Length: 221
Image (cartoon, rainbow, N blue to C red):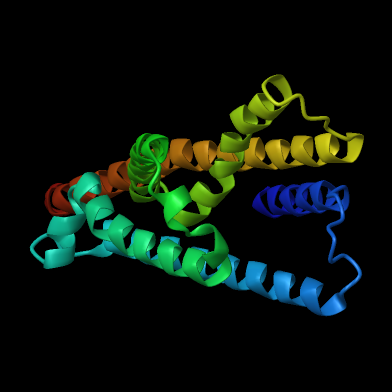
């Protein structure tokens, strides 16, 4: 079931990518190769980030520094988000240096928007860390597809964007794969307590039989 869910996600993502509008550099193979390389590198780095977050949240000893840090999701976010901000600022200065001018940066309305976006990112990061602590990094990456539902609805209702049939079919496949994976995880969670209960009952029966066997042998003699 998990393999089929991954197949649905892969096919859905491919269908969504087929209908992307071509850019001005569509005819430059070197630019396309550079974009693909950057996307693959970003996905690999993001995967390592959440894998390390899962290790810290689930396998850190309670008395260690990482264990105390992982006890509070908000404190962990407060330690990681400043580093994320520095990386984003460095990348913005590297690739969008022309936009970082005093007339656009020192703008009164921009400060309020930055604070609002920062608050939203903080809430989202804390929620993601809680999901990783409760489930896993793989489950987080799959469940984030559900986050695209309000984004797509906002694009259609607010910005009047048009969705092609291939994009709609790809989104439906991704959503189906997400729901299938969530159902599989739910079934596993329901079966695991039953297995533990059967094992514990079998162990208790074995202990009872072990205690009663000497008395039975004495009666037979």
